[in-house]
Image 1 (cartoon, helix red, strand yellow):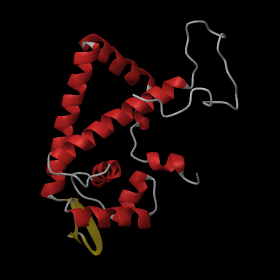
Image 2 (image 1 turned 90 degrees about the vertical axis):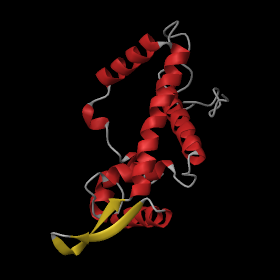
Image 3 (image 1 turned 45 degrees about the vertical axis):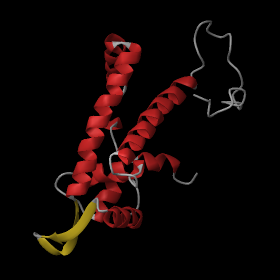
Length: 176
């Protein structure tokens, strides 16, 4: 895999810290490796989903489908869950509707509200995603061995707080 970032330019503002802790890698490598692992899994997922009949599904759509949830949600609720405006959520829902992954309908408890629900096509994509993630994890187990993968998962569960499991990653890049 080619490096996305030039090693000589990473964290150039702070400068090189080589030699401070012999045998240790610079701290900035950890988030890059985690991001690279995430990215490789997501890219492989979407390549496989495309082969399985979901060529237009994008990573942002997966986050949006998760934000809609099994019971449905309004555009405002989806926006809050994703950390974006109601208008941005509405545009994403428009796209999901156009692709057949979601649909808007009346809220039975309040006729003024529209609820977004996942369609059978959306549920199929989510089920296929879960199966592909299982296959990708199995690939990591074949490559690294079951112990290292379990140890990595356990270590990440130890250091990643439960509130970190949020869908609003886009808010990290707001104003960038």
